[in-house]
Length: 419
Image (cartoon, rainbow, N blue to C red; front, side):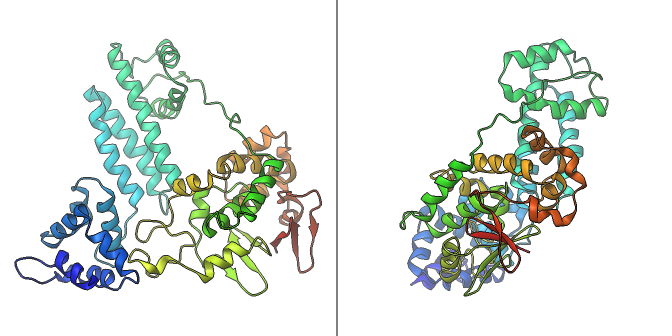
């Protein structure tokens, strides 16, 4: 039945045959373990229409897909075609940013300002993205926000009969006073404009205040962890596994980094479960290991065509992709705020550990860790710490009695850092 449905939508009506380029996709759809799920998805009107149009498309490229109306179906099918080699892999967030930024230029009133923003996008944001192995969700969202606010500023200047070259401090002060605090984000654009002599030197924007976000303290993390461990089946195993890393051992890691974990980062034996996070190998004894064992024994990625051979611990809805970090955060929000937990962890860690060890081990920039160290009144001079200080420094105390355990490692409320 599934094979018949797939053939009907992917075969060219004029020939009755599936194009050679679409055969890998057709084969994958026909071999889905959950045939009923495949049929239900394909027989949705918008999916059927999309696949039939695909069957008669003169060419199948990323560019031809980009020209189609944006939709979940478009991106899902694109992902399937990429997964099965019909389309080459590409950095989707970078491509999405290029498309978004080109459209953003249409929102600029003054042609001169349009050229300025085009340069800002190309030589600042895209240049940075080109230096990344893969554009992160955070970099993508920050770039969009900074360009949006920069466009807001330039349009405001045009409306007040002014230009970026003639910008004054009085203009900036009035613009900030009239709008929301997010206008402070224009500080990034202003610095770029001054450096590139597009704006007068010496101008400033009130910086965004840091350190005001809520932080989940030790007691709050303890309570959230208990809810996770004693959920009685009300929380899915993957949400439990992710929550345990955030609450117990992730040491301020962002949801984005958790979402990118693969089974190559996880070792499951009869005795122990270990998870590699950066340069830290974290051991999860019972009961913290139970959700991870459940995920390893009952993988779901092979049930659909989207993830036939996926190594993602947390596969997403889109083919070949891990779970969207924002979606992961939303799922965990039922239990606790991942941002508050992360900030709370960093706040406490910088009281205990040398800044150099934290930024090197956890993958944060020195500037970020130094800021948290200042907020927590930590001593920045600890940057000269030696590697062996990890054993004494990188500890997020979930109990008042952290102790060394046999075999090397640090016991942390039943879990420990394997050394």
